[in-house]
View 1 (cartoon, rainbow, N blue to C red):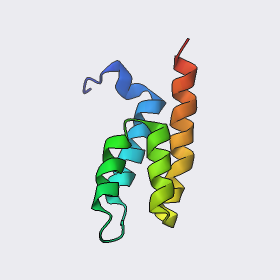
View 2 (view 1 turned 120 degrees about the vertical axis):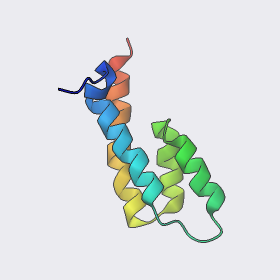
View 3 (view 1 turned 180 degrees about the horizontal axis):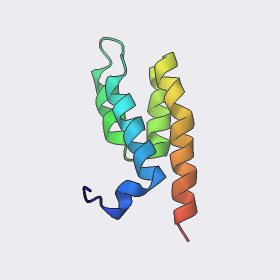
View 4 (view 1 turned 180 degrees about the vertical axis):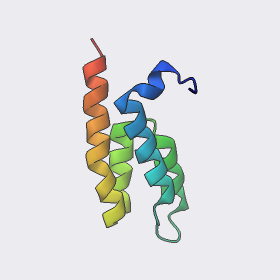
Length: 80
């Protein structure tokens, strides 16, 4: 059996990776490369990434927002 770090077993970690990978696959309009760069950097911050996805505005981008909201809810649950 392969070793996994504790955080790799957390649902929040797996969903965050899924969103980050989804962001990197989005088709963003030509001339909007700064937005692509911002979105990829923002994948570390759910609220900022959600705003960038609003700006992208494509159905694929907007489909990632519920997962980001889920990540935010899970992270809020970890903070005491």
